Length: 415
Image 1 (cartoon, rainbow, N blue to C red):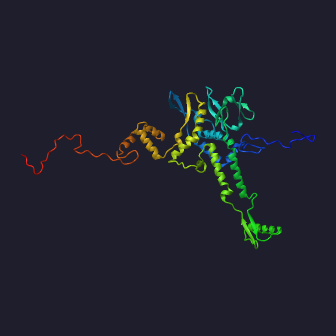
Image 2: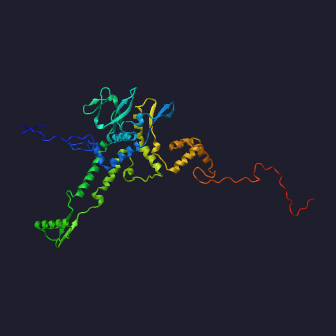
Image 3: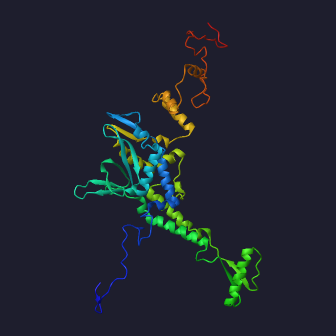
């Protein structure tokens, strides 16, 4: 740093480092950026992660084979039905989503290879135990696993979240939301300290007379003793007990927390009202199905496509997987019945497929005879339908044509 009075001046403490992003770890203090799992203590983060992970995990992953331009549904292999030996498809997909939402990446170890070298299982790895490294010369990515950093590139399955061009690793939403999450944690901690009495007195004793230090101590001890014994307190003339109170919205930073809900939900791409936030616009949904469609389109669809593309690389071409999004877009019974009736009447859907969807066996001959007994006045919606008027002799098709009889007019004499 230079010489001062003939001696070198030494800096007694290092200069603080510049954090790579807001909320990063400084001076060795833990933060949500360096410990992403700690962000789950924030209710909004927990709600966003749970909502997206549950939405993806509830959708069945199905296998197809592309023959020309027509996809054909085929029997799901073991890798699809049971991706890992110790868990089913729904739990496996849920873990993949939690890893993506907290770290921006999900890693799996290909195991139980078949005769063609394709995996029949993928064991999910904790993302912190996988170290991806990019070769600067070739641009290829290498994956090292565990404490001994064993190179297992050929057996790693990798799904990335939001990724910058030229990068091989996804970006963690928690790292980039560290500032908003940190503000939420700080406001909750302050509210807790306030109610615990940290640094803030519960009340003040006021007097319109001069009070010495000894008298103030005696008043305080008298007040504490009466409070412990739950007895009436006599403070003396001119002394008044004034509790310190604040509005609930001020003590709990409700406005600050409400703003944080919107900011954190925006980072995860989740509507704030679905995780306890306020509705910021006047947009309303006509029904539950429309709300689910909006959530699927703008919040879930991107994650579904990324998982589909990554999982399809594990299958033999031209096989691929797709999520059955109809499970998220379930309608009420009346609406579904109307849709089924319209499709059957338009001859684009046979009744047998409706039975299969409902896990019902095909109709027996006896059941078909029973259906023939249903009156024609009952529509598929269960409503009565009026039959056409019965034919009259004048309108019947089998009535012979007869010349109309001409009646003579009164008062006219035929010549």
